[in-house]
Length: 149
Image 1 (cartoon, rainbow, N blue to C red):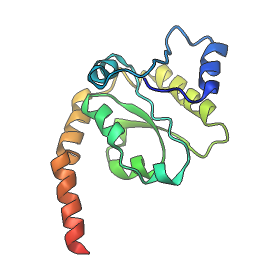
Image 2: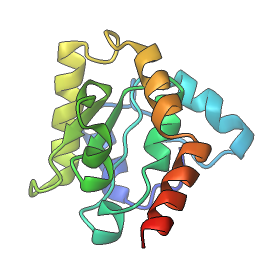
Image 3: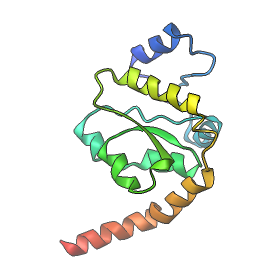
């Protein structure tokens, strides 16, 4: 759901006859987004290998996890540094591969073959976010960091 800025994604879906299960949707009002996430099988974060994304706040990831979704994300620090021993909450794709679109597609295929999404314990994702990444917890971390400097 959003603005598809890369026509090659649309082409890939069409050329590989993925229209029956992969749908790109236009932007929707904010109040409709939770239902779209609920209806999705696997949220994907197709972030480019760009320094600003590597160190950004993983808010979109936390939103998906808070809704009980396992996510496919790039193996960048913004995501890998979050999980420590909880990597069962996320699927990764290798951002350093030459063709990122093919890498994402390959990981989706592997996830589907291994039935990784349907075997996922949703409550674990929700608990992870509520114990570690609420606004209050993040504000305390920032406050403590500011006191150290």
